[in-house]
Image 1 (cartoon, rainbow, N blue to C red):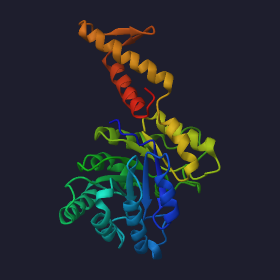
Image 2 (tube, rainbow, N blue to C red):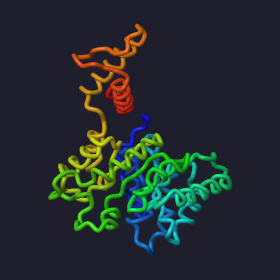
Image 3 (spheres, rainbow, N blue to C red):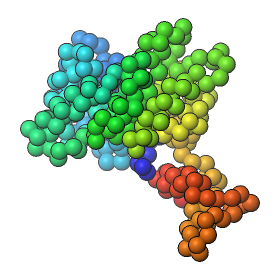
Image 4 (cartoon, rainbow, N blue to C red):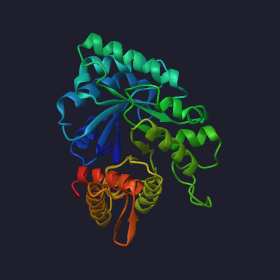
Length: 301
């Protein structure tokens, strides 16, 4: 799993200039949003600029996805059919919001399959990224994560999740007075489910774009739990996210030495080896290999 998803930049599909700017950004992934950032009376019209942006801009160095409207809305069907029929060859993933259970994600999977067939697209090409945003989704997160071969990433959505849980806050991603990491359990569950399916886990947004240190802290906490990236809702958050979710260069260099030393030990028939005074066994080697893969993908090694 060496495909970087350190930052996932959210862009309204109704704003053509923002989509053009996003194509030039350093975000690992950009998603063009048809859901929360587009007003209900503009959702249908927003598909056309999304399709143009997908087809006309250069996304070759970026994972390009879009967020459809929820399956419980009247827009979702055409969000899938129209966009994939006209720009499916340019789209990597579809973000599916508010997924409550595996059957709903399978419903989207089935429709995507039919559109691929009818549009002449490679079957199975388009990935799905379910968002976990309520109690049902969290309760069923492991089944959701393992319900489709299309799964390419699992996303935790703190805004809708906070509303569903009845929390007292009004600022997405922020509970500074809580005595600890507020999202520790939710992110741990999502990350465990994602990793059981062999895909990355992405943390959702931090809403205060004028608080870069708050964003950094939020990203660092997610990173400590094993998450692979975080949403950026403003370009100013991209650099911080890319830095936090890439291995520290010194750690990456040590990990590379561990991998090399352990490989030599295995060739010599030894079960463990010492690196920098620390015992290295197979578990340590696996951790080091993961860091090396991420560091190489980020051009740090």
